[in-house]
Image (cartoon, rainbow, N blue to C red; front, side, top):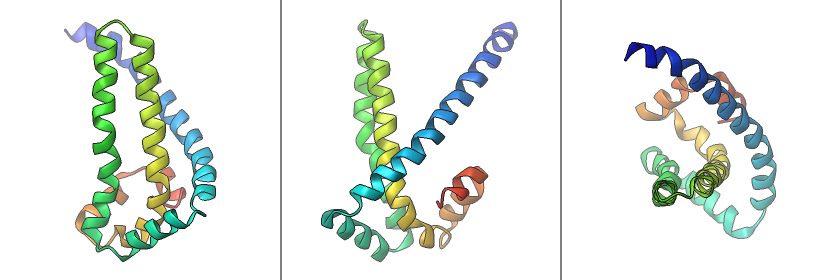
Length: 136
């Protein structure tokens, strides 16, 4: 079993690095798009609503996209299990991009409150320096 780990670890590390690079690249584009979308009145109201929330309910705002996209990802796995591998992968990638877009704008609103509670400071300390450099 150890030989399998030695065989699979290098390609999986490369794949993880590629995925992180793509997400970083997408994050910059999604910030531009969400900044444009943030000009809409409903989105402004949502941002003001987030800013009025206490720290722990504000963190729930970040859990919500993941909870909403979980059934989509399960459906993508179902598609892959039934022979539609490329469609399943496309659905998972689209869900990842959508989740990143949804989280990128509230991230800006959450930053002032993110360090008010233990979970927020853990999140901030545990993330990469690139995360802090993005303004989150």
